[in-house]
Amino acid sequence: MDSVATPPTAFDISGKTSDPNTGLRGNYAAMAADFTVQQHMSDYSDAGQARWLRLVERQLALIPGRACDEFLNAVLGNPALDMRHGIPNFADVNVALKAATNWQLVAVPGLLPDDVFFTHLANRRFPVTVWLREESEFDYIVEPDIFHDFFGHVPMLFTPIYADHLEAYGHGALKAKRLGGLDWLARLYWYTIEFGLIREHGKVLAYGAGVLSSPKELIYALESDIPARLPFDVMTSMRSAFLIDDVQTTYFVLDSLQQLRDDTAPDFTPLYEVLRAEMA
Image (cartoon, rainbow, N blue to C red; front, top):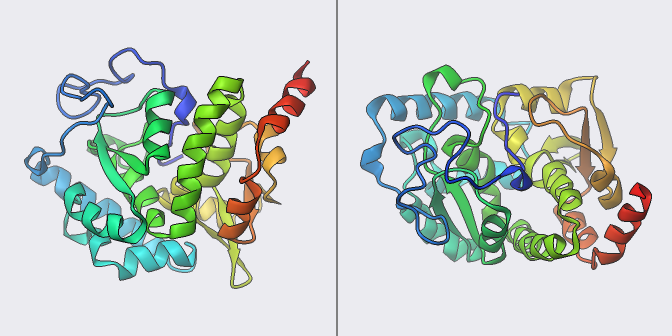
């Protein structure tokens, strides 16, 4: 996979990521209690800015006809999301994002503990990693960087129904952790927010960040004959294991974003009980 988005439950807090560097990457030393850091635009080198532009141009060339309307309208029609001028300043984007859906971006140094990540979502804050991949990782990266987080996730936050769903997911995940259901809910996140597909205009298109930010996954998910593309179903997705270091073998296809909101609205407590019984 070109850009692996590690699921929230994969973080084991130890004060650093698996590949800490002395710069922005995995630098938890300056973080606040909620794991946020300050984004300093001066931290991005000219080489990094050039790399960002190459990543953006490559992906912008691929998304027409493959990304859902909501994503395309945001990326191509919203001046706040014009990424062709360099790495975005979160403070500038937050002005437009707050007006659109009352969400805010918060800068973070890397992967977050479950409670921290879900608490941010439940409060309509989306964590965006501040560091950018190295040149040697241009086509493959093992943990989310600013390109994956911003290009893949942020445009969909401008869609109200999607933004409302993500807040509800944050609340649901905090509850799932108390009930011992977090592993199952992480699968739901993986197959929707990260690798979800949707049917629009009679075509299957992408809305998941892990698909939209990866050239390889985008083409494979939509055009390959190899993977299964199943109608979205909450229980089936929570029963399905996923791959974090390769393209997926299965994708789930929504009929609409309203379906995602409606199908995930009920109390999941009885679903966890059914899944737990299946494992007994």
